[in-house]
Length: 333
Image (cartoon, rainbow, N blue to C red; front, side, top):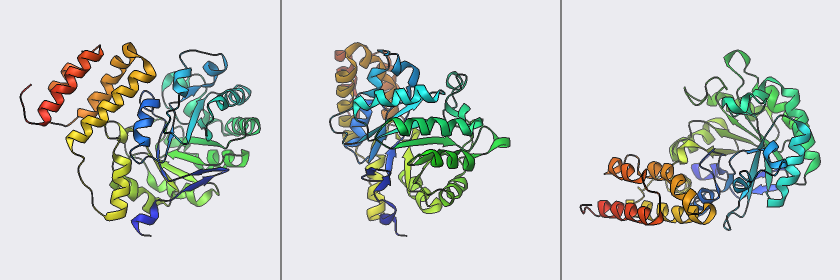
């Protein structure tokens, strides 16, 4: 298969994704502002940060911003986490107020505070419950329900074929797998051979995740495993251009560096979106981690980051960006 043929639409139940390069749900990063940025830079489909089913059904004000949708997101998915089938179904119904194209079930988060509630990767130890959750949600909402899993709880309990098959049989329209165990967290290497095994087993689309940190890695995963799509996660932090670069590489076989001036303008637009969605006080603090990611590895990056982590107002952020522009132009600041 030629590189350009690796990129294509994906049918997940009644939902047709325009392409197969997606933004995974990334806690603290994949908010409406960031999803808006990547939507304009070649991302075919994006997921919200994971949303607590308990918090959503109880009307938590802190949860609602996670569901915000940018105007240029023609389609997006809401990811829910929880351990109670009826509560997850109730949350899915509530989530329909934001008109998602599909709703995803988090069965892979390894964070202890999520796991101790029986949600996230804790569900990998209870495949039957995954089936109950998917079945309840699929019966409750008119959009497809999908599932994100890991290889298993640990090396002694790698059961992804079972959990994925249970989810499919219960009505899941697609399965995404991060090719690490819960015990691995985000360390070690993702085992892409297991993605190939999963693709051969399931009838529904399979998306791969894990160690997709570059355009080359994305195309290599598609070619080597046969998965239907790729989910970028940590590899997108500070590099929202990765989607368009992957498409460029597939189409032309070459890659061009994004000029620092273009990086600055995208980061500035990103900051503006944060202001809009979060308000000045919260945006000025939250954007610090985004700015650090944008400037990582760049010239004068350490000095710029030292100033950025102290920026608390729009005026202070404007000054930081002016310093970045000066540095890019080779001028002192």
